[in-house]
Structures are given as structure tokens and as C-alpha cells.
Amino acid sequence: MNLVADIGNTSIKLALYGPEGKIATRRFDVFDEKEFGNFLCEYETQKVIVSSVRRLPEEYSEYFRKKAKFFHLLGPNSKIPFPVEYETYETLGTDRIAAAAGAFITFPGKNCLIIDAGSAITYDFMIDGRFKGGNISPGINMRFRALNRFTDALPLVQKRHGFSDPGRNTTDAIAAGVISGVIYEINEYIRTFEEKHENTVILLTGGDGEFLHDKIKNKPVYMPDLVIDGLNFILEYNV
Image (tube, rainbow, N blue to C red; front, side, top):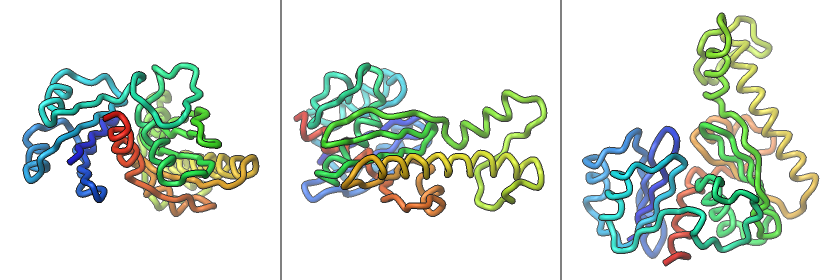
């Protein structure tokens, strides 16, 4: 049994994989050994992989190391099954390379644009089986917080579906400006990617992926587990 841990900026996602594939997943708001134990109590794990986009506290590392004989922390020294053309590989987010691995195994031979809509929105490019790099943009909640923090009069607005566009009041103007702006941005990335490349697939993942999916013009393939699927593949590749 494989244990996959994806530690993001705002949550921790654990997943269990057996020979036939994914068995269970759960998202946690904080590191909690008791809650982790409740999730894992029915399973015996032999291999563990951890990906973290933030500095990994020692207690996290110690906990996961104890869960299996084989422990792998995804990083610059990990073996990756495709060329990575990124000049500062040591600064590349492990979630990004894991998502690329998920795309690589799920859509072999395809040119993939991977959109991960989380705290930040990343656009990563898998072209001809090679990771070409990508772009990073502020996520939805980050944009809302920035407007509130760096102005004196604008309120903090929450992500929501219903708002007037163009906005007929300040909160709707902010909601429309941020959410519509993100959608226009994504739509243009998709348009230019499909214009430049043949045999393409567009993938959407991340915490805001479900919220955005139906709003995007050319519906991408929504894969909420793309990162953990990629992590499980990388784990087996490094055993």
C-alpha cells in the first residue's frame, strides 16, 4: 500500500493507493496525527511519498517516515520520468512537477496545458513529452486579499457564484473584476496554447478548479486528483 501526502499552502491531502489504483483520499485543514491515524488505521503502508510546497517541519517528516519502510520526499534529487527544462529546478514547486507527472501518465503522447487553480494559479506546459516550464499568477483569494490589503476603502470580498457583471455595487465590482478576470486569463491561455500546438489536452486541477470549471469557455478536463496521481507514479518510479 502506498501513502501519498500532498502538503499545500492551505491544506494537506492524503491518499492511499493499492495495486489496482486509488483506494481513498481525504483533505485536512491542519497537520493532525490523531485525524491522520483515523484515516490510516485500516491500512498498512509500505511506501510513502511527501510533496510540500512549503518548508516541511521536522515533525511532519518524522511522522511520515515512521509510516513505511520506504520514504521519499519529492525534491530536486528525485528521479522524474521525463526531461525537465526548467533553469532553476531547485525552486520548482513539487506540486507542479507532480501534476506534470499525472498528465504524462494519463495522456501519453499529448501536449498538455496544466492549470492548477489554488492559492496561486499555475500554467504548466508539457510539450512532446518534456516539461517546458510554466507561468505563475495570483489565485482568486489572493487577488481578493490584495485589493483589500493594499487599498484603504475596498472591502474583503469572498469567492461566490452570484454577482452582477458589470458590477452595480462595490462588492459585485470586486467579485466580477477578480473572478471574470481569472476566467478571461484562463480562456486566453487555452486559446493560445491550442493555436500553437496540435494534439492538445487542457487539464484543470486545484482547490478552485471545481468552482471555475463550468465558467471556462473551452471546458478543460477537470482532474482534482491529478497531483496525487502523479505523486504515486513518481513514488513507484523512485523505489
